[in-house]
Length: 137
Image (cartoon, rainbow, N blue to C red; front, top):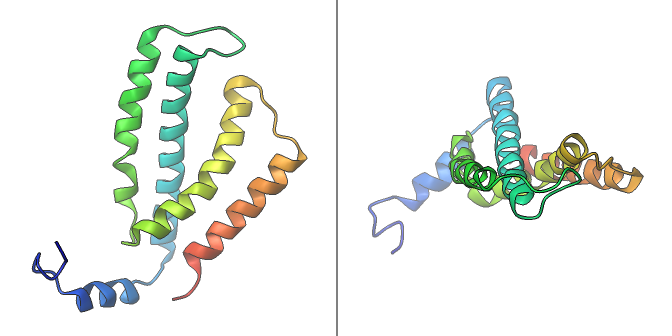
């Protein structure tokens, strides 16, 4: 079903997206939502991981996987808090944040210290997605 069949004017959707302008508040909100989404996905995934596969301290109890699964379900709603409506762009940009946060949380939770390649690659990805997201349109 197209957006026209739903009673949505496609011209209005394009106009709304083009009329969006970044402000200090929306930039802070957007970065905070990316960080919150990253923490939720990584912590939820880690809880499932350590219950199923374990880590240096061994396997965790089954309820770690249950709590992790609930966190991952909640994570699915977090991107809806973004101030823009560009689904594809939001998820693409989130990928860069996820890369960097994964390295940081792997270091904190499991002691996997990022090496130079991790730091350089993570920095490039984060710079790249910030260019994508905040590029003037």
